[in-house]
View 1 (cartoon, rainbow, N blue to C red):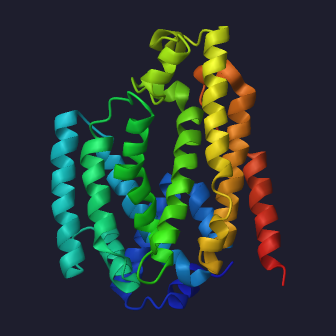
View 2 (cartoon, rainbow, N blue to C red):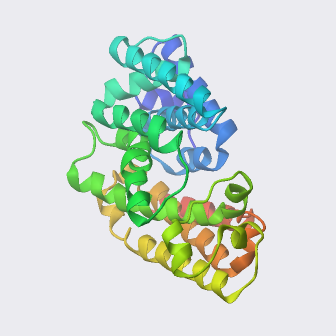
Length: 302
């Protein structure tokens, strides 16, 4: 793995302040999401790493603001953040090194601004005001408003000029699967925080109440609901097949690893059954390390 200094140079990032900004953004990702950061550093082509780490740092920054505080505080803080982002993208400058790094990445890679504005709008509406989904259509609306642009504001930086329609559609399928798996893996924690991420219509279909889920009742109806939800997630995961053909060659090992990790986590949720209502289902330690090492070996092969 090349040093960070070498990685910055490979991306053409020069100047002390700019290199410091990108370093600050990368450290923020490392602190908050060490697994994705290590996957980027170990598996991605070095010229892509600073752009994607800056994008991931920006996405995490917006997520954190959208999920912190009262609804009124979230709305006010997101409005203020949106102003700072718009100023940074316009001028290339900001008091925040993460925004400076991201503005530089967007400008260097020519990412279309509509993905960023769409993500910020979704953060202020679909995420900050989240109160669950009535039906599948609401879940799909959440993906379109927030989760899909949230992925493209950083993965889109792999493409000079941004993703084309086919590439963007491929990432839409990816985020559909990723969000389903994430919601299922975090069921216990979300319910404890007052968030129900399974559409209410599907609870009604199985004659399951929210209280059944909150109290982790092991009933045939609850088991059937969870089996149906993991089945939908498995179908969505299968639909991501072919995404590697739409990814920059320098990011294919990372994307392949992400899909493997999703499949591993979904299998763990399936095995947990009703236990997923009692405790969040993590990746564990052994499997992610094994998957990363296997990917690293594949990357080294000529």
